[in-house]
Image (cartoon, rainbow, N blue to C red; front, side, top):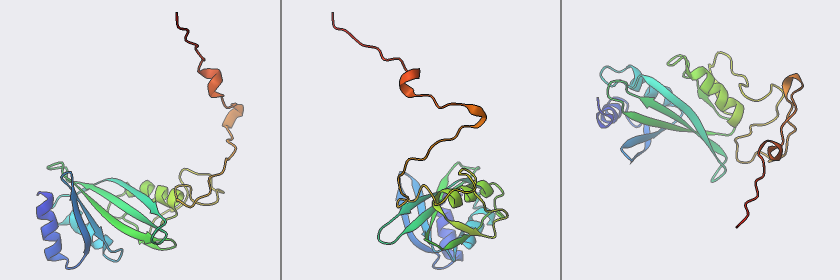
Length: 176
């Protein structure tokens, strides 16, 4: 089923779930309320003939204005016709979203990454903990208000960091 038909069925079956719809470069983005997120994703995956069965990515974009929030972006793909659709939802700082690990097991690490780097929590996640940063790390480094400070890098097994000027030789060009 084509994306436009899927969106039409979605609006017919689930009334008032779409906050905003946009089409750009033949890809559709639907913004939904967090209360309706799970219903929308479940419908797109499980409804007969819709076919957006694959969660190909789950990421976020942090914003400071007009309020501090993270826009969480779900990329779904229909393996039958290779069409994609984006579902977005806004999570204010401190708000949580429902986990979709019961719909897609692969969402486990995506949600952990969003928690680790953006601070978005997911209700019902089986093991929500840091995945990239050390366990004792303070803050969420992909938030736009995260302080930009220099952190010393500790390498394992006594490895010493390389200095770029030592591994990339400087070549002087002379004009003849």
